Length: 502
Image 1 (tube, rainbow, N blue to C red):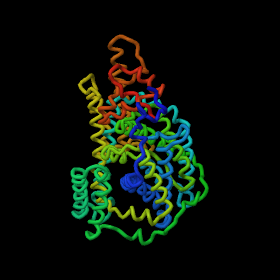
Image 2: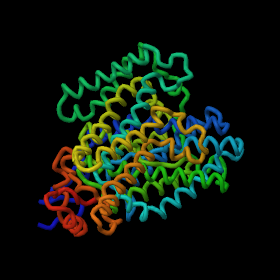
Image 3: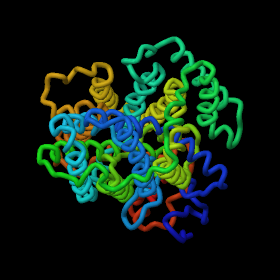
Image 4: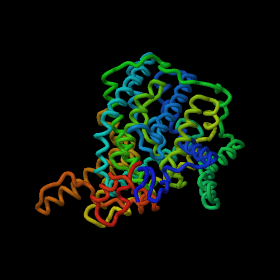
């Protein structure tokens, strides 16, 4: 039976990614995504602003602009238009990969020219990334389960230190950093989330993270770690005036630095899309990757117009999708609308910011652990007992953990290399790809005396149903000629491997 559109599954059933929920569930689930990623969006401008000589008021303006542009990028990613957007439940926000280079640019340029030079470099990097997206998307061929499972696991493990830092208070220079009060609130929130997930049912179970954050924040008020100062100082309306800090300036060194950051962001976003595609049961193909990268890079190119920075997919929200099983991209699009409102209304943004970091850290441990668990589940389909797959995982995870376990490991190397090496996700991904090619293909072909086939990069078929923990991927194959053609090239017995992107 032919499907009417690529968005619908066999028998005209709508794929969970394309489902719309009732308004109340849509808003509360979207708000849960915003709460999970809010600190990650405002942290980069909080770091870059003072480094560029901004006052507290100007830094707050920069934070609002980051929320606004994150909302725009999220809508591009989830709803999409033309060939832009992965049309998956992806939240986009300011990339941490650009923080260190932007701070360095700010110090080199001085307070008067810092932000205009940064914005000019971000615009060029975004345009370059947009042009490279069709070619970069072909990397999907190099991500069989042994690679994707390793990368997803590294994403989760790399995020856990962020949750631990939040649990201690977030600012290691603060006198109460790591205090018993902070760790106690994180532990309590962690337990509340687990209990709510265990005892609640239906929709309430799906928003257990949001309920846990609300409960933890209310408990934190009498404890004394909830800061109301931002709420009292916030204005009602605050539109991010275009080019508020001056017209963009274009400096070659800054442009090169941000273009490298863009390539790192595109690599991580590719891994994130593959991870999320498995979790929601709609494996990401080249078309999905290309559209997602276009949304990332277009959002990045437009962001400086409203005083924002480079955007990329937020991995922490993958954990929320994995845990809640709410796979609708329209839920995340609602979260994007909420981000835009928060960017336009500083008072509303301040309400969200009332959640203390220790409370967010306790919930984050569950969220980010869910991402790592999804990676382990994906590795279960990678035939670890075959060939050198276990060795590939061991080496890639080991290299990927270096920036986490030993942050100063690459300290004496050139600073330009640190943009890549300080990202455990990027280094682990590269190691996994190279070793998979070397051990599972080049070496095998040579041992068999045959010619090396560089295009045969898929080590094993993708068992999307096992990886995603459901049957939704199988339901979404119908009606797409490209998907059927891809499925015909896969080994028999894997009906879920070629589910269409949208």
